[in-house]
Length: 280
Image (cartoon, rainbow, N blue to C red):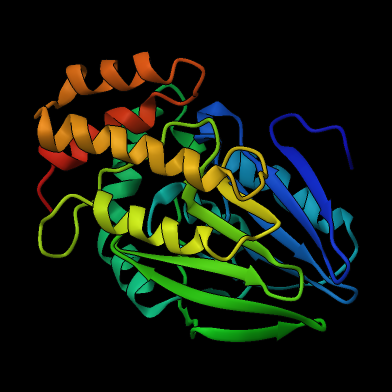
């Protein structure tokens, strides 16, 4: 199955597995799901958001002819779990903190995105299918492939899951890294601070590991230099927010002017709204 109506698939052949990076189009927020194919089975990391995109991804997964062993959700942002309705009946795993946060905010987030897609509300699943299986940190071996599951706190969201393939020196960074897509920075830390400092520190730590391949949550796979690019973006956004006190259109316009070749201005709108207007 290669003739897609919505999604784009980038295959990365590794010595122990193949990673299929499945990208939603811009109305699905250019989100990446990662399908890890072993010699025996499949593991899906994140589910995309819109029903049409998740449905086409499911058709692609089925076309590979291997069993889907489990679905993993990396964090609570809806572009990474809302498509779970398409995978009803499969075990859906997440870290305990992620399960709890999705359960608490699912109704709000579903409604928020229905308001974005008022012209076609059926794009947003009517049924909540949420992760319920608790994922533990550490080494998970599936189909002979080792995955190192790492919990990252207080960065792009309160808790993110990062997945290493340690035998390949590859990291599935998901939303710790965006590649030529405006990164979302709308989640404050648990003590109410902006997320920039800890996010930057985490990226510097990841940079020191010299991964040969970094697969982001939005945008195409890249090499380790993507960490410097993401750090520079966050440092610039921090200056605008913390030092210059910008918000709303002034903040959005300043970032767009500095990064005119990036995509998905919607994430900047959501960042400003969640930082300065929304109260949980």
